[in-house]
Amino acid sequence: MEIHERIKELRKKHLKMSQTAFGERLGVSRSVINNIELNVLAKPDQKLSLYKLICSEFNISEEWLLNGTGDMYASNEAEYSALIDRVMTGQNEFAKNIFKTFALFDEADWEALRRMIEKYIDVADAEDVPEEKPLYDDVPDTPEELEKAMPAS
Image (tube, rainbow, N blue to C red; front, top):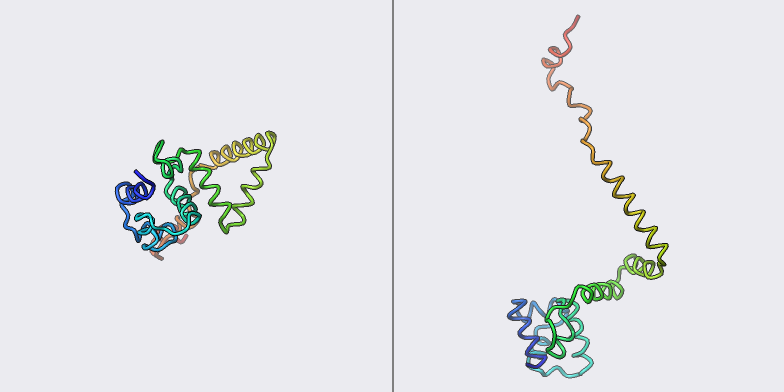
C-alpha cells in the first residue's frame, strides 16, 4: 500500500472523516486532501510538510505513514514530542517560555520543583475542610419569625 492509500484509509476507516473535515483539521481545503489521496499533489516539499502535520494532528507514526511499517499510532513519547513541537511553533509566548525554562533545569531544579509540588499538594489537602456556615443563615425571613426567635421582654 502506498502513502496516499494509507492517508485515505486513515481518514475514512480510522478517523471516519470526510475530506472536508480532514482538511479543516489540517488547515487545507478538501481539494488538497483529494489531490493527496489521488497522489497528484504537486511539490514534494508540500507533501512532506503535510505528512508531518497529519502525524502531529492525529498522533500517527511517521514511520507508518511514510513507509507503511510499525504501528499506525505514535507512541506516547512521540505524541509528547509532537505536542511540544506544536507549543513551540504556536503563538502562546507564555507556554513557550515555560518549556524553555524547563529545558534549562538541572537535577537540583527538578528536585526543587518536585518538593514544591509535594508541599502544594499537602497544603491543598489540608484545606479540604468543610465549608463554614454562611453568615446570615440564622436570620429569620419574616418579622413573625423574628418575633418568635427574639420575643420582646
